[in-house]
Length: 417
Ligand SMILES: Nc1ncnc2c1ncn2[C@@H]1O[C@H](COP(=O)(O)OP(=O)(O)OP(=O)(O)O)[C@@H](O)[C@H]1O
Ligand SMILES: [Mg+2]
Image (tube, rainbow, N blue to C red):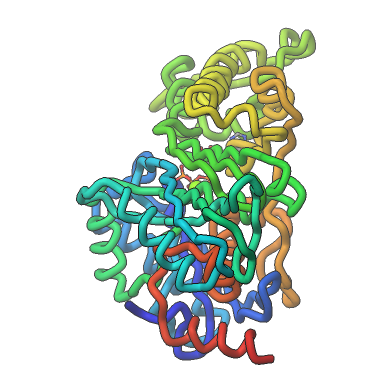
């Protein structure tokens, strides 16, 4: 197990996405603050639907993104905290209880209870990404935030686990090995997205973040400040680009440009009159173009977007989390599509907004404001590191994080300062 921080005390956050890899280097200050000193990104052709499909281009993408960030400080980094580039996620809640007989609850009671709940996770080869104590109840008292020192008959715990199949994790490890990086923690993408974009109030009330990426749609539900559900659907913006390319017989590059510049998922009478020139595949733009009303582009995009939000709602309904989602926050590159907020609100039947990553201290403006959305995964990882890896009390800690020397020292320091 490597330390969270590099030798130069930097956090290196690495997000290996389907369209690009991005990396941010930052010094931790406190649980809500980190000073960003380097950032870099590079396109990725080695990943599809958030799974490695070819090692060499994925390694190349990681190396370039990290090197671009390192260029700011002219130093090398060795250890990263990374979003899990592993395709699917499965989420489950395990419960256990402990008889107390009226005595004061101690840390060792909590440890026993947590171990009991962990024992209920069925044995499998799957990798546990997160194991989060999401709720303590004491007899009939619910939502106990810190059971230590309280008294009662029985203490109950709900433990949320996020798991992923083993082979994609091994492939991700191979990519990192070949890029000469070790990984101190892999974080589920929707967890990072929520930490990057949701306000404190939203995380408490019950809010789902929907990360509309190039290859996947991540869903993370937060309630009482904890991640209580996570999933990743194998559908992303790349599919819409492909559909546009097929519908208008144009190249993927042209389809991508049309989608981002003229795409929308809301109808408008004005779009009937507005005409767009689309170059035919393999043809010189000036020689062979078709002219289509913008409304036809909207007609290709809209059903796909509707299908995504219907699937999200169906999944949340089936798993019983829809009722606690008071709000939905859309993020990822797909959240930049014109009209997406209104479309999501009409299907999800809730308050919906698009979410920008909450800005951490970036004194030197290393990341231009307009590029913040593309560093969303890394910003989420910085929040995870400063808040959860370095500052969470033991009874609320993500237990999948193995203890390490620095974290122990940091906690000792906090407890004694
Ligand atoms: N203005 C826009 N309108 C519509 N789609 C957009 C816009 N800008 C970017 N996108 C889409 O966003 C996607 C890229 O988003 P993002 O950078 O979040 O993906 P990623 O993190 O690489 O992928 P994943 O999270 O699925 O691994 C692409 O499909 C791109 O076409
Ligand atoms: Mg992403």
